[in-house]
Every structure is written in C-alpha cells, then in structure tokens.
Image (cartoon, rainbow, N blue to C red):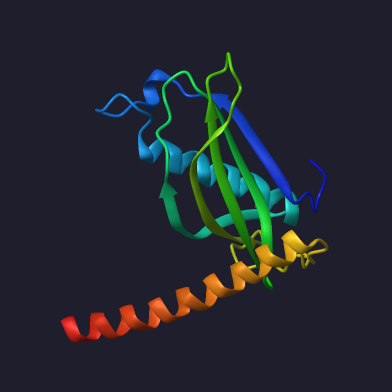
Length: 161
C-alpha cells in the first residue's frame, strides 16, 4: 500500500468463532475488526506505526450473521499534528446475494508514533469535495464535543472523591 492512501476496506467471512450467545456475531469481534481497519487506514495514510487513542460513537445498527461477507471500511476524515480521525463503516451481506447492509459505524482516532513510541507528525489531509469538507467539519464538531464531555467527566470524578 502506498503512503497517503486515504481509504482501506477489509473483506472476509464472519466465522463460527465470532458468534455470541444469541447466534449473531459478537460485538467484541466487530470492535476488533474496526480497530484493525482503523490501523490499516492510519498506517496507510501516515506510513508509520499507529496506536488507537479513541474509539467512540460506536453504533450497532444491524446484526451480522455467521457466514456473512463482511466489509470494514476506514477513511481518513481529519488529521491533526500526529492524529488521524478515521470514519469506520461495517457492512455485511449474504455472499450469494452481495447486497450490503450497514451494520456498525463509528469514529476511531489513531496516533502515528516513532520508533520510541512518541507521537510523530503526519501529513495533513485536505478535503477537496463537498462531501469531504462536510466529513472534516463533522470530525471537528465531534472533537469539540469530546472535549466538553472530558471536562464534565473530570468534574464528575472530583465530586465522587
């Protein structure tokens, strides 16, 4: 994969080992797939080893059945100095029909690191289309909301002590 590739899609079949007690794919398995796709996307953009700093807003909107063809797509929607905000969509389909259904979506923030584990600079992603501009603006709004939530949680923790 060449550096500065903005999007990646992982494709595979959901296996029996991924099943939960209800007979569907376990949410933890889906979260692992999300992390793998976020890493592949961030590493492809930055050309560096990347670590997960945040995963949030995970919405499980449709179950995945064992045997489904799963597609996990990660796309860079915002870059900071060393961070990359990756939008993740998980879709699944019966492999005989190939009609994808959105099953899960979220945002993952990955940080590029150097050989000493310190944050490393990444190239800025500049949106060109109206859709990309909207995605970047959404990432910025979410970043501001996370800051407000973080401040509120800190105040809450202080009250609990």
